[in-house]
Length: 178
Image 1 (cartoon, one colour):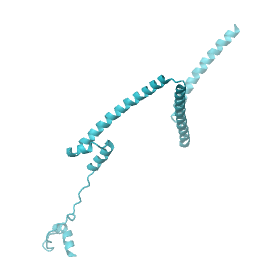
Image 2: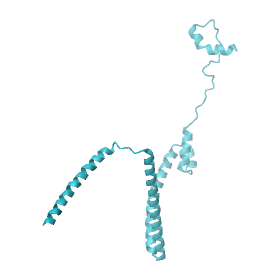
Image 3: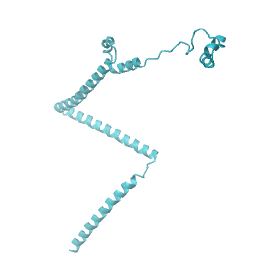
Image 4: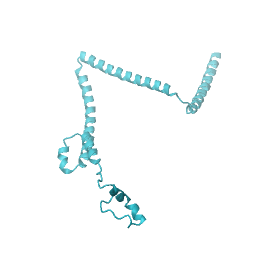
């Protein structure tokens, strides 16, 4: 009986300890907001994570290649065919979605061109159409070669002008003085 009592006491003590761990973890989560990691340590951990992920991907591809080789050696062509077919069907659905999106994009881009150019432009891919659209829309503004607001007419007499007109026509007067 004494062993039974000891066991029950241990179980109760373990329950109490687990409750303390729960409260400690809650308290540590509250403190985690104040905790900051140095940038060098973060980069180091991030790089190691990326390395491990790439290693995992390599191992998965090696496992798949090994399974394929084993199936070929066993001449298990039916399973290989079914796996390849399933993979092809997955890619086929993705390819159909991509083609529908690409054709919609191309149609939208073709609508921005004049009708007489649409037939010729339809042979181009959508990236080229996008670039051509941006070139057509980015027209270079025409430069005004009129002389910058200077009237090109007859120079009025300086003596006959009031001060306001003198300021207005000062550029014309100075140009003809040269």
